[in-house]
Image 1 (cartoon, rainbow, N blue to C red):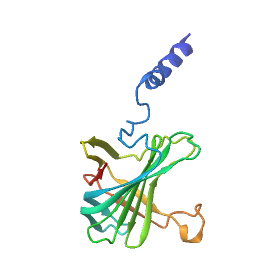
Image 2 (cartoon, helix red, strand yellow):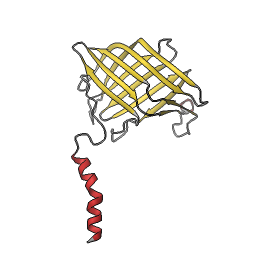
Image 3 (cartoon, rainbow, N blue to C red):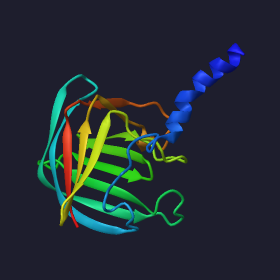
Image 4 (cartoon, one colour):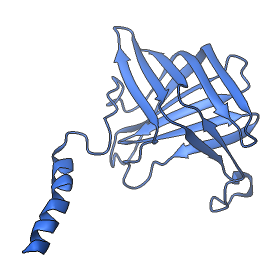
Amino acid sequence: MVKIKFLIILLIPFIQAFGQEYWFHKPFNSVFQDFKSGNFSGTINGILVVKNYQGEKLILDFQGSKCELKIEPDKDEVYDVSYKIYSGETTSGKSKISYETYCQANFLDLIVNGKRYLVGLIDGACNDVIDGLDYEYVAEKSTEYLILKFLKPVKLRNWNYELGMVDNPPKEEIIIQPSSVLVFAIYR
């Protein structure tokens, strides 16, 4: 009888979690969520405070640079109708960012000093979100804002893609620091 009570106590949080509206994270509430394809332009603003693998702090400045939202169809429409890919570059044009969503997953790709750093996973379950990254969509009549806020350090790794071997260990990593914020303003 004690084992049954213990089992019930252990299961209660899981039962409650399944009853929640958003079990893994909040949804991507974009006005573009159900679009199957399209290209939209806009601007990107904000800063990313980044520590490189040597511990040096870099500030990536995105102030009114051009950005775009590219919506690519998922021909099989397994979990979502399309991939939403937001991309932009720093004011100097030396660094680039790409943020992608699909179903309940997100992915971040950052190019700094010619090196590519990645975090996130759009896999078979399509439910992995980047830990420490908060996102919010705010819509006006002609513009939608995607606000990305880094609440805690987020590590991005530089994989050995030039060798064509994804299984190689990471060469380097960079860490986006808390309080970094980016705003993609996409015109509809």
